[in-house]
Image 1 (tube, rainbow, N blue to C red):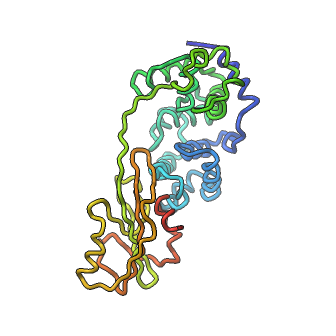
Image 2: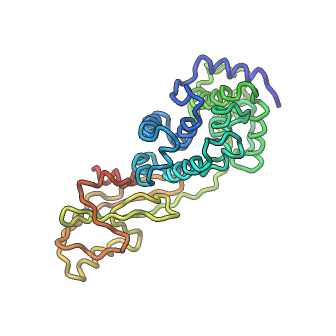
Image 3: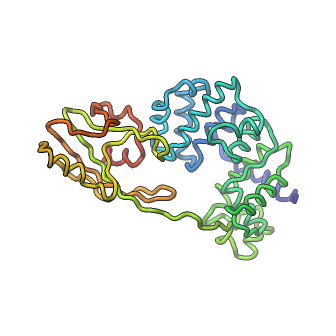
Length: 340
């Protein structure tokens, strides 16, 4: 399918409305890749500052590759979805081993954490490869304009939208077109309250004509949200705090946290201290702090426990001077608990 009017109108809109972003002023693939990874699941208003900090701290991909995981995680702290940071670090070492930033779609996709969308963004913006990006913004714009009700998270839908997006892509303007689609979805054709009255496609938009703006795109509900209960214990002894690093296969892998119990294990620490005659004081500081992740809701309690002698803890716990805690990367939830 081709629609030159759609493409021409989109590029004309983009020329007047595009967002001025620092990673758009360059063809440096490292800067572009870094921005794409940071902006996954993150608003530009938040991600921009992180992008600048990463570029300042690690001005080249080789500098990032030479960093330790703790350095990367600490700089990423607060952004969430920490697997992105681990994948970013791993991929930087892949690139360093390769000796140059990959410049073909196959090589770009071989990088850890880089899927079709990110590869298309890097390929088109850094190397002028004519491949269309397809993300939430693109799904929404195309579904509404063409009136497509095939679920975007179905196998059929993913194939249909990828083929449609590719058919519309002007090969000589791949970078501008891809960025125009992303900006149009983010600024004009937003999920709620889109600016339809001022839209250049108002006369030709199928969803506007048929009253389906709110119902398109269609997405199948496939995930069940689970609720988990955590109780964190800030165990303090002799000016030090017991902390441990979360292990592999965990959503917070590589991040530090105080002693934690979950569900039916909650209260076990206090019982153990009492049974062994350890002198301690315990004070509940927070109850049911709600933290929402993609597929789960966490309700967290937070207690301060002070002991006269160090309690017996699992081997992976270490005692960190309280005034050095800021040097250890923690999850956003733990950060909230520690700061309030």
